[in-house]
Each structure stands twice: as structure tokens, then as C-alpha cells.
Length: 250
Length: 159
View 1 (spheres, chains in turn blue, purple):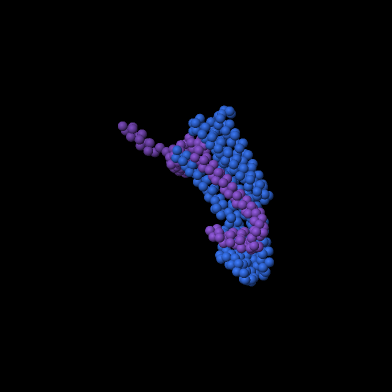
View 2 (cartoon, each protein chain N blue to C red):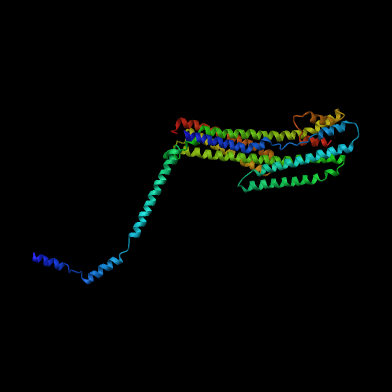
């Protein structure tokens, strides 16, 4: 009984660890917030004053652009720090993470270069610059961030599948010791679980394939499907557990 | 009596035949010494005996402290694998991960929706309001509880 309780708590601890590993990034997936201070209010005040204070307005715009660019760099570096937390022995995963890391580094270099241009901007140039930064954020930051989030998710899913695989192997080993007839309810449930579990695993591998091809949207949909199949397999494991306790001398 | 004394005195002078004495000495000298081997065997068996005793005590402790029995330790039947508590804990972790995936998906979708709808909203305000920039800034300034995002500020600066 104590041994059973210990197993429960071990599994619960495992579940908590799996979640704890993924929660921090999810909790602040949008990255750190930016502090624009009073600059927005200042800009508004200058624009509504009626006086044509172009230089003052330009300076506030430049300040806001500098804060924005600092913020975009911080956001990119934040994604990189999350990426560095990913640990795997698989060469393809390591290579993919390294590729994302290099893209992030290039993105930081781009922002460093753009930062040097701010002081020489005119009013129109400042507006165009803001558009350019907004586009860059959408086309590069968001894409890289989504890749990091998806890879982190995939690694968490991988751990869940590994735990499921171990669990299923132990269940099969236990059931095989009873030499049950082929048409026994428990073995039929085991067969059902095997089908669902394998389908989930195939989906999980397809998720990785899509993710490594940078098809984030497709990989996310598949990731969810793979986990739903894994959850379905666990429902059958629970059914096996219930029936086994009633019919087998456990 | 005298005869007996005579015989006993004669026995004092009995000596082995020289050839027999030499052969016996040779046999004794050439016989391999077994005392070292005996000592080794003795030590070996003592160590083995001591080791086995320690191992048995260790195994007994493991069995006792682990609240297990030899049967369950070496049996292929792992009833823990079918414990509903463990299964539920793992299933719960999967459910939470599915919810986290949903959150990620919603976040990225909302970003895309915001990006695609912002220009439309801006067009509307530019037609209807004289100072669109002012409208946007006031929206940002009024939302004092939620600081503006970099997206919002860049949209504002682009105008």
C-alpha cells in the first residue's frame, strides 16, 4: 500500500515537474513589457498644443523609437534565453535550436544597427522607421518567438509521450504475467490502447517534421491532436486498471 | 627379568637402516608444503562468509524498508503500473499541456487578428475623426491599468 502511494506521489511529482518546466514561458509568452514612461503623454500634449513644435515632437518620437527598439531587442533576447533552456540529446533538435539561435543573434544585430540611425531621422523618416520596425517585429520577432514556443511545447509533449510509453510497457508486462486468453476483455482494451497510443505517437512525430520545416501553424494543430490521442490512450489505461483490479489477483 | 633388561638395553641401540633413513628424509623434504594454501583457503572462505552475511543483511533491510517482498521485487507483475492514482496524475499533466497549447495558439492568433484588423480600424478613424493620432493616443493613455505594447506604440509612431 505504501509502495502504491509512493508511486502515486512519484507520478504526481513527475506531472508537476513537466508542467513546471513549461509554465514559466507560457506565463509570460508575450515577453517582457516595455516602459514608455510619460513619453506618449508628452507626444499627445505636443500634438494637441496647436503650436508647430516639430523639433520637440521629433525628439519625443526618437525617444519612443529608442525605447521600442530596446524593447524589441529585449523580447528577442528573452526568446533566446528560453531557447537555451531546451535540452536534448537528439542531433536534429540541437541543430534546429542552433539555427533559431543564429536567427535571433542576427535579429539583435539588425536592431543594434538600426538603433544607430535614429538620431539622424527627420519627421517622415521617423514615421517610416516605425513602420519598418513594426513589420520587422511581425515578420521576424513573432516568427522566431513562435518557433521557440512551439519547440518548447514539443519537448514537453515528448516527455509526456516518453512517460506514456514507459507506463504502457509496464502495464503490458504486468498483464502478460497472467497468461490471459486472447479474447479477454483486458487484452482487448490493451489492443485498443495500443492503436490509439501509436496513432498519437505518429502524430507527434509529424508535429516535429512540420516544426523542423518551420510550418508552425500545422505543427501546433498536430501537437494538439497528438496530445488528445495520448489523453484518449490514458482513458483506456484507466479502464484497464479498473477491470484488472476487479478480475486479476493484484 | 635379567633377560628383559637385556632386551631393553639392546633396544636403546636400535637405529634405522641407512638406506631407509635417507629415503624417508628425502620423502619428507620433497613433500609440498600445504600450510600456505590452507591459510589462503581459510581467509578466502572467511571473507566470502562475511561478505555473504553483509549482503543478506542488506537485502533483508531493502526488503523490510521497502515494504516489499522478494516475490514482488522479482515478479513481472508490477501492480503499480495499474495504479489509478498514478495514471490520473499523468493524464492530468496531458490535459494541462493541451490547455497550454490552446493558450499559445490563442495568443498567436490574437496577434495576427490584431495585426490584420488594425489598418482597417485606422482607415475608419481617419475618415470619421479629424485627429486619428489623438484618438489612438488617448486610447493608450486612458488604459492606465494596461501599459501600451510595443506594437501599439509603433502603430502610433507610424502615423
